[in-house]
Image (cartoon, rainbow, N blue to C red; front, side, top):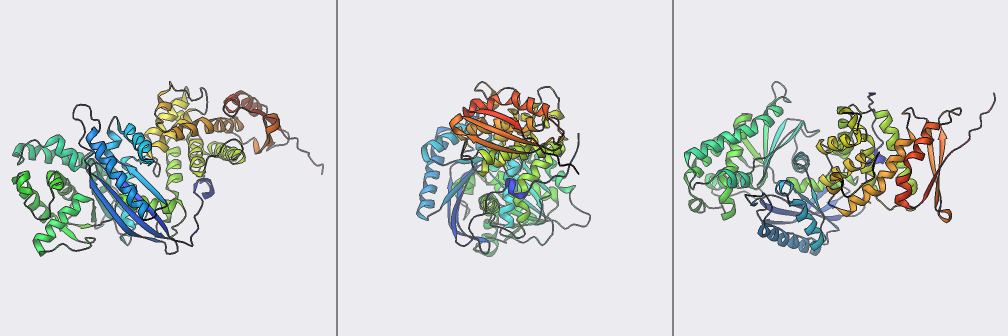
Length: 552
């Protein structure tokens, strides 16, 4: 396969820049395993920066799933729905122009997680984006970068959630490692702690389990460090904020406000773990500053942090109050062209992630580049005539075009199906789970059968909107693939001539070489046009334009 360093023009994938002459109000919601958090921010594009004008947090314990089935319980879903409704009311009262919501570990793993998200959309009109663990880590990194300066020094960020723990290594620029491990304060408390106070046997097992789960991401992180690097550690999340607050209250008699920048040492943390393990839940409630819900899970959370600090040989941790929800805000600003400073490299994270996976699977990028350009040309020239999809859908089509042939890495036979599975398993940063599913489906339907309800891949698209994207844009991708049938760039450009009175669209083709009759491309277009004609109820007529050759 031919490899290329092709980088798509920014205009292919970026959203249009928003006007930068006025402040904007945005709400960001993090639907976590333990709590639902929201921040409402005022974005000042001219700086660019954002100021938090409101916070909301409700402990809903979505992670308290049915032990037999792993499903989200009706009680937890009701608590979450009420909390989200309250978030919407606050956002509306503050004139937020948009609310962006993401869901993480608990919803991601529950068999009925997608059903829950669909119900929220139906009941509240709120679309919640489900994100992968690695994508969660990337956005946490963005959130921390928005509130701290790294000064080009390596920092490890740890975020201990209810269901997972994220570890990120970065120096203020590109993250060196992003990992998400299935150990969280709620998960471990629910699954591994049955005694109160915890027995020695359970404590030792829990300690060994945490260490075993953390060893691999820690080793991956350490391989990225240079000799002589002095590693600093940043902690985010409610668990770590609670530990730092408790320690500050006991040592200094007061909890600083804001908490940002406060520290806890490994020595102090070890003392807290040894103290918690000897106390029952009722006894822990007597500790000033420890509420009832946090008291239930604080031991497991503290043990995760202690093991991480021990494995990384870090003596102290500094708190950062910005995390995933602020990262969601930064990601939105980047996508809309509102940030041009030290974070600007992140604005191209989607296309760089797609290209990285294309190279991983030895995709012929020169061919995929041409297919992508044809697909976008078809998209642009038929927009407003045959479809009304926006730039978000356009970006998904671009990603699918670049990766449509990656299944050849597994086998030529049924490679479109292999492409689907490889894309689903790929770490496509910057995309939500439903967007990755859409990209995978677009690639899967670039040949052979059209989308059908009996196909597992198509059924995995739980959003009607994204099903329609696949139904309407996969025919465009099929035509784009046909236009480079020989993979030699035989077609130089295309032009769509829509004749609504005839229910016909003429596809005018310009050959790269005047002597080339492009017979194979024309045959392929004729073979593949049926899905386009069926979807849009229109006849497609490919025409190779004649080229006059001037004599010298």
